[in-house]
Length: 297
Image (cartoon, rainbow, N blue to C red; front, top):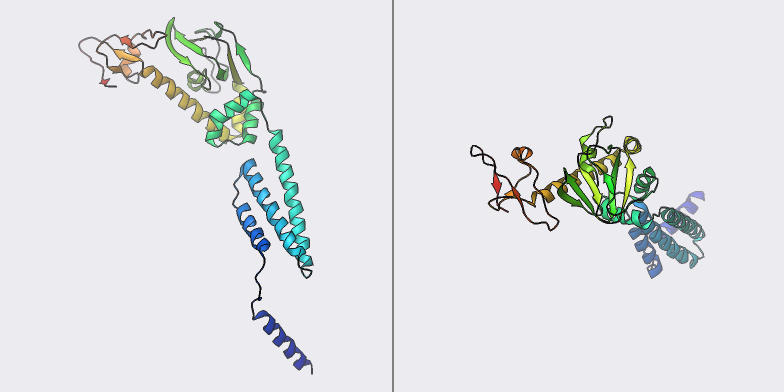
């Protein structure tokens, strides 16, 4: 008797499960899973989390509506509604954190121009801003940021606005423009334990603003966050290369050919005076025995 009842139940189960439902699930069911699929395609970072939890919220909301329409899916409704609530809570939490990581306009512009393109997250950038205590310094027109042979190299600075004139022995070298380092060659020339002074003079052509990180505090930040140390190393060396090439574009010899500053012979030639108009400068030729390599522009 018991075996016959078991056979009947097995036959009923096979009859139900061996056939597809006559009507497919509604559009809300499919929309929910599309939204869930898109949600799991989100990336990392604050904006990636916002993207992910937004789609998950709408996906679980559609699943909740679908489960509510079927009285036989109480468990499904409970789970999808709970996951919908969790997604909403996570979305609010991430939005609050994103709003709390905001900066003044000058620091936001600095992030957009220098750090964002390198993939630095807002939280990592927040540590960089905290290292300089969020201070923005001002230099009045014709005032000095550094004087050759006198000013100690004790910080790393980035110009935010204005223009800085760089001279050596009274001769013009080049300008420093916004979002360029003021002292990248000096920073890169010293080890953390070494001390030194500027070999050039930096004077403001107009009212300037800049941000500065003290050496000791910045090296402590590098010790804790190796990724930030690599970012600064990349930015500083790229800035030095840009300054060298800007000098290289302005140096010409008596024949009108561009003089390559990277040649060792340049170290023994007096620095030419480059006028404010950026006119080509004349580089003295060496004695007959040696001729510098020349490159046609």
